[in-house]
Image (cartoon, rainbow, N blue to C red; front, side, top):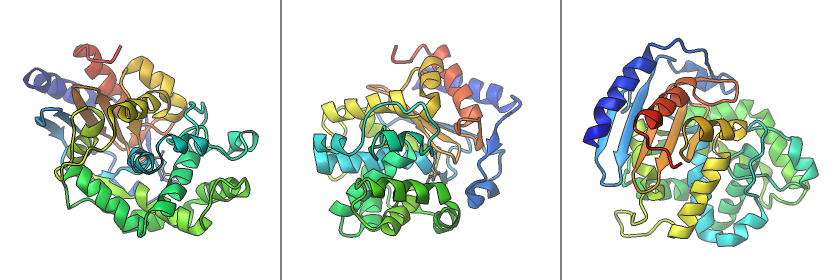
Length: 305
Ligand code: GLN
């Protein structure tokens, strides 16, 4: 960790001064109220050493990053059966696209695009008694952090403006790949997206994908080594929608972004690093977040390749 601190700090200040050509997401009105000046970075090593710079402690809307947590819980319930409902192929399309679903008969390409996450939410609803409460309890156990919660305002804001997700969910239902009530699935999905965490909290909650020996504070193993490896593989190939190739090319780590401007990147066996900067590039990924991580893995020579 000591070796990384100065590098993180130097790159942070270098990138902070770069002209940000991104735009804050405004299709969810509540997200547009967040100041675009926020910029934070936090790294947590598998030895649980943590280091942060800038707004690393400020909570933000994790949005699609929650798709990794919902996939993890569904994977625990379903095991390999899960892949009958959701594929593991990069989509090469925007995160909210309806295009491939028709040809693929309602089977989403992967769990990290909206279509896939909606099916994952449907699966969780079939398993959980109180989906919202139970999912939150799972996240709290994973991070040993009882303060984690949803942001009601963000969830409601997305609910009244989520026309594409409403279309996606109905379309998948028409193929029979949504089993529960469409409104119930959408409501749960919007809440999962509204989870709030800081860079520090995110870098802690995702340690289970970096550390093969990770157990929760209650002594529970989250995923087997084999399953964690598979989730990391999907993160590398699908974590950034139609920019997943670019992220692997420039950064070289499995990771996941969200339209709140957060990016989580995982170096298996070493660390988890999280960047937050709300302005997004055209593909919906944080402009400065990607730039920071590209410089970081280059300078530390610590990509997985
Ligand atoms: N809640 C957002 C949506 O469904 C999540 C998208 C994202 O973060 N890429 O549109």
